[in-house]
Length: 341
Image (cartoon, rainbow, N blue to C red; front, side, top):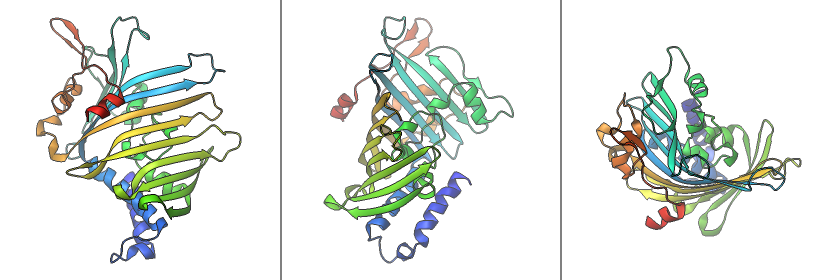
């Protein structure tokens, strides 16, 4: 089943439920509201990602248990640039890690990029520090998945709306996560209960089993945000994996052209047997539809990263002649970005 078909089936399920099919009354029970909120999230995803750009800034921390022979804390300072225009068949995905003297031989901080750039039938990608090396072009008859795997590009994949409510262990795992809202909550989960709680929010509990995974999910959807998710908790029901938790908190901001969009994302997860925990704190900056100029989405560019510079007032590391490396905008903490906003 295609992802679009999956979404349509999800919506059909909701509207074919007797209490939801009557368009003369809005969902009233907590279970109805929970399901409708998930449907609205899927629809928001599909409408937003038709023509958009997104800049994600933040940090990802890995905390290792004392039993692991590694430094106890690893902090990754990151950027992600994402963009797509469905009418032009253009998609751009990238991930950047800010490297410093503590992890490289260079005496200064610099950006290490992984990029995937697709326009119609042409797909390209590259990885590394800023360089004059051109994009590697996909070979004829080579699948997108095979190209991304062989070029080590799969880490750029993220479907941000699906990421909001799936287990944080999947962040950066390389899977194509588009459609996991439907897959996780409709196809693989059972809705156990739902209730209206403080300030009209809805809290629901689900049981999700998939492969080796077995979790109880607690989902909180905020009335103030049209019942979009504000908190998700995963608790392992597998007694042999007690540390395999997941937690996500989402802040939303009203966008003039598309309603609410996620603006701050905090995620945490534990490995199955307690060797490590991962924590992510990201700040999201969106541009939707006509907010982006016509010439933003161009095919055949030698460096698509620079398209984001005038939109976000952000410079990437580049090589220029003469002079060589020109360093980009310094990284800021999520807390500093939130305070500026």
